[in-house]
Image (tube, rainbow, N blue to C red):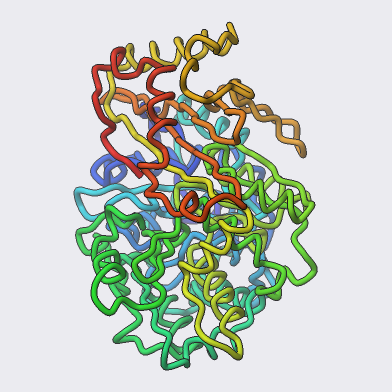
Length: 572
């Protein structure tokens, strides 16, 4: 663009920096690493170099979860965008924009000049801790609003290994990113600072029946609490639950002030890190409904009074009720999907509805491909991510509103129905998938490989009689999970080892994050109890219910002897 050739644009010599390989969710490193001279610049320039030339007049979104060092990073990227021929940049005020809001903005927003966005740099490390000693991250999303596909992340990484210069404005452009305003900076370049939540909130109002949810929240016998974990969801939560739906902020909101260090906490919505919310929901006089979102507001956790809904059950329950409770799905669901390690509860719902169910590797981009092709409308993963094809990212607020929609529909014109009774009714109809995940962290690399090698060899032989003798189980199928995307044909090999038992139970082994501190073995355990049997079969304690599956998985893998680990580091 004219800007790149004009005054102030400079090519700054640089050299490759090791370790800039983006994962499924971009590049995440400590703040100290990202803020070192040239580190962010190299990664951003490598991204520009791997993209087609920016479309004339189209906008680039730059925003994120507000974590420490975000304003500095945004200023750098704005100046680099100008020098790289981008003509317009959109920034959420205070550089705050939830990841789902960025996706909605790319897909739906039309700017004051009629322009649309072509992509985004999202400044987030999701649920990782923030602050000066915490993590920072950058991920690029494409024009469909979804994360960069593997072909692009591979190209970016390749480019980081050969980069020789980056382009920026000198001195850096000065723009007030703290409040809305349109800034014309000359040379055909402009920056619009705007309300980053607006487009997403307008979309949620089209997806859900806010009137029905408002009626639920107005009931004297209903109470709710939402924990923003000091992430970016807090500000939107106030607007949705209080301004739009009438909840009392003093009672309904917890930790809803976004902070650069997330209040010193770990902004990951699970039973371990959302301690305050869990204490409230399992304490005296617990509210009817509780929920939390993570740092960048794409993950969610759902709780009833003294009751935890697993993410695997959550997506299955939403799928079973979507057509009757959520206007967006009133025509019926077209298809659903889950990540392979997520429990098979969703499969049961899809079978009953007579719709397609896709099992994909972990990573939201795999859902995006199916959604773009119109094959899948609702999806979820065991790691607290749930969403639909209204955008191309997982969406914490969407999941909360989906549950409130179900509660509202069940209570319409009658008594309140609890979260727990909705889930128990679901189990009575579809059966229950008892589910748990064991993480063995920082296992010696060689030992971890030995476990996986043993399992692969057993799969190869296919002789299960001796190992399963006396367990009451027989092996239906044991394989390596490989995925071929039915839309674009991209192949993802070696995504984990699956062991499916005859009664619909299973265990899965995956190796993840091999790094300086060893490897993590993830063991996913699932026992299926079909409906129609004695009621107590659906009401067991999860770990108790899974005992024999755990014993079987440990026997087959010989994990304890090979790794020297008596117990997992974390049980989810």
